[in-house]
Image 1 (cartoon, rainbow, N blue to C red):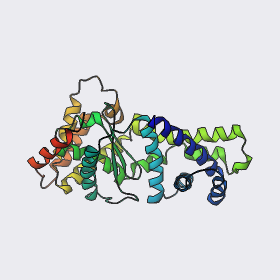
Image 2: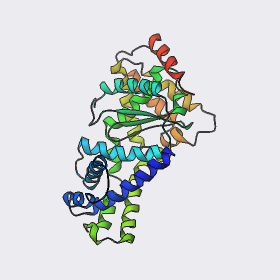
Image 3: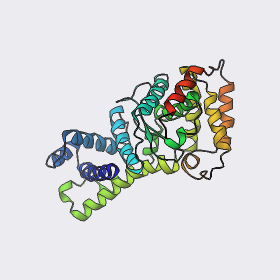
Image 4: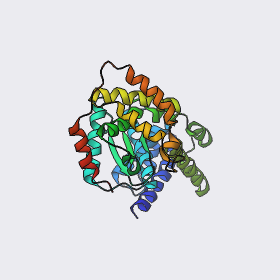
Length: 304
């Protein structure tokens, strides 16, 4: 029920976003939506999201990145329910934010947010602005905190390097604006408005699908692996946690090899070779600590 309501709300926001973006100026768009019954927070989100989309071919500010990421995250959550366990979610956020502090981008507009998706699919994904998701199925594959930290550091790497924004700039957004032009919302009848809605649903859908179904480009995944080793080591985690995780994925025989992580990431074997080189280049490698493993095991008792 919650997911259904969220999907309806997201669809409504997309419709109004389409109207706003179609206006010749942001101010004109603000005036257009001011007559529609929405909460002040929704209106602000729509203005900021659509302004960012319209200017996506230019430099995107951190604030604009946040609103884009929030819109994409809403679509992800409409597909996968959030795992409702406060204690485990807090633990994941502590580990994730600890790694983020030692990343190349310790701060985003509204901070890093880590959520657990309630699905057996094995996957993790990062939306623009610091929204990071890890599935219950992937958590079950983790053996200790160092392995978990390595996975979260990989996703933080995507945010740090702004891989999401780079992917957005390659989307159909610019082509969409060529179709729409600068016509004002008042010129659109129901048919034209429906067309606009479809266009922008597809744009946000493309981004969400890329994260869920296709994943980032291989070069971005390899870069995120490199950053995972770097960020994890800075934090004091054993970077071999990533290597250990990839080894378990390489030998997978559960029948899920065409879903989730396996579908959205390069082969584990190719990644293992590159990660080994990164680890071998380190002067010192932090060691695993029993206190972290015990903390991990206590937290994972909440995973059912």
